[in-house]
Image 1: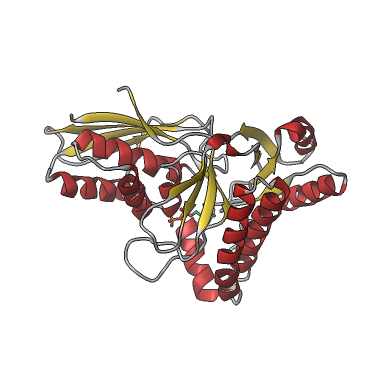
Image 2 (image 1 turned 90 degrees about the horizontal axis):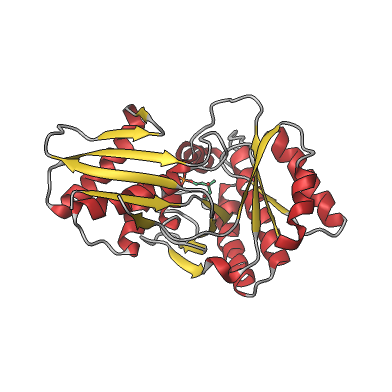
Length: 320
Ligand code: DP6
């Protein structure tokens, strides 16, 4: 086969990955645990073609060059090495969620690319190998290979599922911060600066594994309140360590959103906030409170849209 199409979903880290081990191969310094976001996906077609002299990448309808293309080419080089092939490929990738939505497309993108490229090249990679190759491109992508609730231990090659999508009643709202589009510092660069300059980086490295273990236990016990508290604590500690290094992803939506969910909790509604490498707010709640929480979030200023998601499935090959 010289062509394959794969689909993968983005994921939201409940226990955050922030910081890398000082060794080759993009290994996280802390364990992380995410939920795969159903209803949102990246679909990637890879076609090897003897007529091509270089890999081509078309992302959401536009040809890509520079460092973005290079990251994909590095993945393709690993696939070619594994297949013993020198053929170049055309990669066409589309996200069905908005690019500036606060949902990183690199996770679903590299999970879908690793799966589609290996299948198109005829190499028989299992899910663990696909996850490991996706991690080398972007560590959060290792988690998007699996569905439901997924962990990536520090220093290990691949992610693995902790519980399937149906394990827990969970609704995720992504509140897209529509305010000024300042160019965000990439996750990799933000991590590098945090490790180099933050007086609280060591505290983060110390706290994250305990937070992860407690969150994992809360997940297995289906204790939503505990899970939510720990997810919010992980995000706040990650951001605190980054902010102390001058890496500030928080914006007005993050701050107003945090205040709002804390007020909701005081009023008896279980809702918890988390944030990643951008100002967008993500809120965790349960089915029974979803409508109420959504209505409350709609009152936030500077939110351009609210995306609703529930735990989703694994990356998979779809019909070309
Ligand atoms: C804040 O996976 O984008 O979303 O491995 O350098 O590509 P690289 O980083 P990336 O970092 C994700 C950081 C995060 C937290 C998380 O998803 O765990």
